Amino acid sequence: MTVKEMTVQTLTEKVLNKEHLVIFDVRNESDFHDWKIEGENFEYINVPYFELIDGVDSVIGRLPKDKDVVVVCAKGGSAAFVAEQLVEAGFDNIYTLVGGMKAWSEHLHKAKVYEDDKMKVYQFIRVGKGCLSYMVISGNEALVVDPSRFIDVYEQVAQEEGVAITHIVDSHLHADHISGGKALAERTGATYYLMKSEGAVFDFEPLEKHDRIDFEQVQLEVLAVKTPGHTPGSVSFFVNNQLLFSGDTIFVGGLGRPDLGGKAAEWAADLYDTVYEKVAAIADDVIVLPAHYANLDEEMSKAGYIGDTLGNIRARNDMMQDKKKQEFIDIVVQNANTETPPNFEDIVAINRGLKAVDMEQQQELEIGPNRCAMHHTR
Image 1 (tube, rainbow, N blue to C red):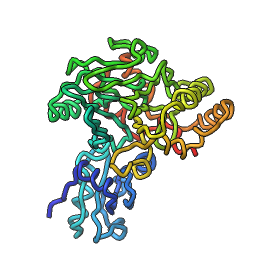
Image 2 (cartoon, helix red, strand yellow; image 1 turned 45 degrees about the horizontal axis):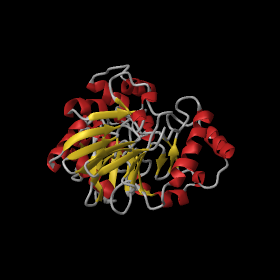
Image 3 (cartoon, rainbow, N blue to C red; image 1 turned 60 degrees about the vertical axis):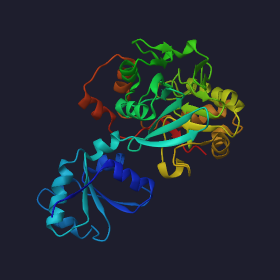
């Protein structure tokens, strides 16, 4: 009997459908506890691979035979070795995750967010990483928001939709993943926009020069200089007075972290002004679409995308409700010692154009969860 394989696409559907599944993770305990495949109805067993090299007898009693079991490791090889032994031991419900956690980290799931007679909007959910990117389609053109480095995905969707990617925007200089903005612009000839204050050293179109970007039947407002808080040049994009691409400023379950630059109090004051002045003027029924999420089960809408109305987000988040400025700053500073995104200094240097790494190094740098938010501040 051969070992069955499960792709990241199939596993994503199981996560979204809230199916029951057993994840048998054979990575080291520290890696497992730091970052694992999250599913609302998933069960977990973690036994490091080195404990299973000489046989799987020690875990046979812990594994069910009436539920599907997916064996997971970093890249797939160790899991396949363990799975083969389990099949030989009589299990017929064993799968390996093709490509392991590396593949899980890199998969983008496309979901439709919005459609009317002027535009169509897709969200790309990087399920294993908690990162979100978007494509806004109108007429024969498309704009991409916060693209990941997997630019083939956006090009494929543009081709399927019969449109050209003409505009690319990054809401800020990302700290937990490598942006695909520059590479996608080079491939497509699109204009790439970024805040000059973020310190990138390559050629781009500074958002400081644009209060808005218009194409076809879309009007994208760049919320003026701008919506700082997570980084000093962090911006939000308000599209057709209906959608707010909030970057890492506002999340479904929290606010962006202003402590990554070592200026927690100063940038928290900026974040306060953003929340209580600029965002306060936006209507409750506007749909907020962030650049990250923390918990898929809690933050996914019934429509199948990550986002919510601004009114619902305000109602849940007491940091957005009648806080005095100093009180707000004090809370942020008190929470400023949480873990930083793994390798964030290297990733920021790459996104600024100050450092170049090969594909394998990019994969290694991005491994792990995102930690860009003060999540669930209620």
